[in-house]
Image (tube, rainbow, N blue to C red; front, top):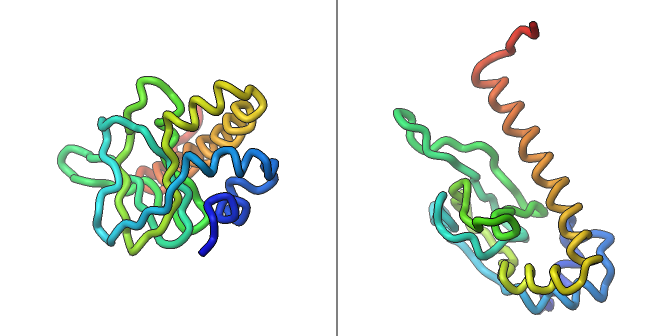
Length: 155
């Protein structure tokens, strides 16, 4: 059985992070498993975790009145999700649902915030990584909106 720090070293989100930091943050993580169809978190609930997917698929969804749940993006092995733990007011802005059996490392957000606040370099490293992830997600949503609503002429 692999330890959390070894799992992190193998995960793309943590590539290049100093081994000492991997060991340091591993204490905030635990292995979790989600059955297909299970909601991992719901919009508006308190956000105290983020997840590094080791196996499976997770749909990020919003509820659209008149349409119901709408998938914004489907994430796979090697992705992470859940940036709401790092930004006040620490509430989920999307639903996350396991599409298939999913195994992940779940990180306690309070534990990570405490460690990041206590070590500015670690905090900066996390912010850079999350900023890149948020930018990619916004770009994916933009492309999906173009696909749904077509191109818009520029003025």
